[in-house]
Image (cartoon, rainbow, N blue to C red; front, side):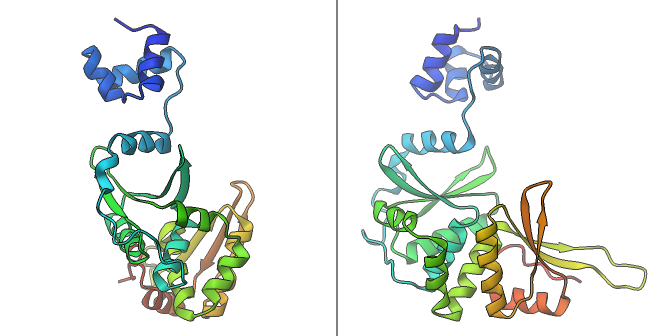
Length: 259
């Protein structure tokens, strides 16, 4: 029997039970619970809300796992890489005064690379595998790091990574692994192929900063605007330059070469 709206809302949002937990309680399949939520007009959780609730229930996951208490906020290749990821797919959140650094990924290599960089920066990072969702979730908790990161503007980040070529490369690696793509077309009748490296972003100021860093590194990515989708695209069709880019940047994903 379908519960009342008040009861279901209390279980889902009040007690913060998952659909699977409610299903077990009511003796039904979790898909049935999802149908109840929709039928009764109860908003389903976003992915980020679901993750926050999941990890709040498993807060023991990172106890005693940290390398040291305070993160090292002096610029390094690890920190530059972390900044690149956070400007891409990663994020910093403040939930109930608990500051978290998070990356959700379907590719384990990327999640492990981010975890390693966080640990090398002194953060208590760990990657949890959510097999039922096919996701690797890398998380760390640090109010000191999060508040420092939130205080940074794009100009400050650019100035920091400008200090050394290795920092620029590490930042681009993190951002490319997040928002880049490696598009290899089919061979044509003469045996040639079309190959482009792309980076997509919704923030014009951010994508412009990335383009400037690429220019300083010697990579000529053209900037395009896709107004219908409110996106900005950096793209390189130069095959030789693309080979050099992947060799120097060394991304852990999106690094395939044409046959």
